Image (cartoon, rainbow, N blue to C red):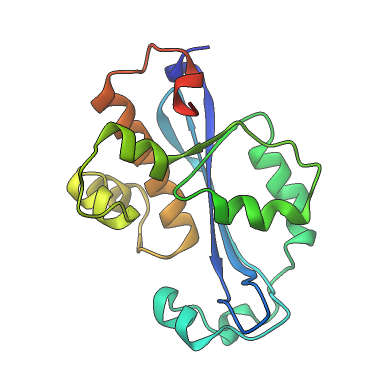
Length: 189
């Protein structure tokens, strides 16, 4: 299968933040899909998640999500059928995929993938950048404007916005490296 033929979904989580002796837990999920390197707005999905604990002050400063936003939100577990339906059978993209993989450990036999880490791919395709932060790369490579046009209310550190930006960054990297007609495995090697 060629790069241009894969079915993709990008996944992003926002976290309640780290606390002493306690790892971060997800408080928002965003998923966006792309077919034949074209995003499909009908697939966009976002939800707050009930973390069962307060959001740290530091995390709130980054993403602007507070405890009041999470009142009545579903648990990650209750959204499992929705998440599975949106990710199953697709290659999964994320910028710094370790966080997303860690949060999906709640479902140890999920079987999603292969995974494409746009952070790792960016370092290979556009080396020597002063920053590989998602917002910085998307701004430099002209992706941020397209993301804003496709998603009204687009903002950094919002799960759906970051998922969409990851997809668009991936597509931009594919075009920059001229690898659309290469075997899809090139994205994970």
